[in-house]
Image (tube, rainbow, N blue to C red; front, side, top):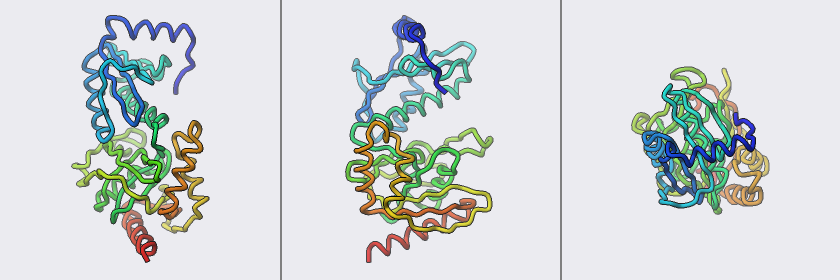
Length: 292
C-alpha cells in the first residue's frame, strides 16, 4: 500500500534521483504513456528493460532523452532489500529484491492501463477460440489466470491473463505477458509460466469479442451458466475497467461497441479440470447461434 508523501519526502527523492549514484535510466513509451525508470544499479535497469519488452512487445518503443509522464525510482541496497518510489511516493521500503521487482512490473503495467491514450484496459483474462475472443473479467484471487491457463492448454490462443486491451471499435488486442498462477508455492505467491511451458501460442491480431464470461472459482461450485442482458454485462465490465474514473465516457462507448458482437454469460464454477471443457463447449454453441 502506498504511503502518504510529505513535501520533505518528495524533495529528498527528487534530489536523490539526480545524484551521481542514480545515473542509470530507462525511458519507454507504451500505448501513448511515457515512463522513466531510474536506479542506482545498471543491473536493475537491464532486468526491467527485459521485463518491459516481454510484456509490451506488441506496443513498445524505447526513448532517448524524452520527458516522461510517470517516473519510478528503484533504490537497491547491499542487503538485498530494496525500496521503490512512483512519482516521488514511496510504494515499498526495504523488502526482498524479487518482491520489489515484481511490484515494479505490476505498477508499470497498471500505470499504462490507467493512462493509455486510445485504449480501455479491463482487468480480465483473454483467450481466442474459433477466431473469436472470450473475456474473463475479474479481480485477483478469483481464479482468472488459472482458468486462462487451462483454456490455453486445451488449444485456445492466449491473449492475456491480466488485462483485456480494447480499442474504440470494441476489439481486443494481445497483452501476452507470462501467465502468473498462484498455488505452486502457496495461495498468495505467483509463479510465471511461459507459453512454451503451457504448450500454447500467443495471438497477434485484434479480435472481436464473442463472449464475456463472468465466473469465479468456488469449492464444489456447479457450472450453471445463464445469459445476462447487455446492460447487466456492461456493469460487470465497468467493475473491472481500469480507467473508468478518468475516462468514463470513453469506457462506456467502448463497452457498447463490444456488446454488439458479444454475449454475456455468468456462472460459478468448480475446478478448471471440470469446467474448462464445458466453457469451450458453451462458447462454440453461442458462436453457432450468432452465425445463424
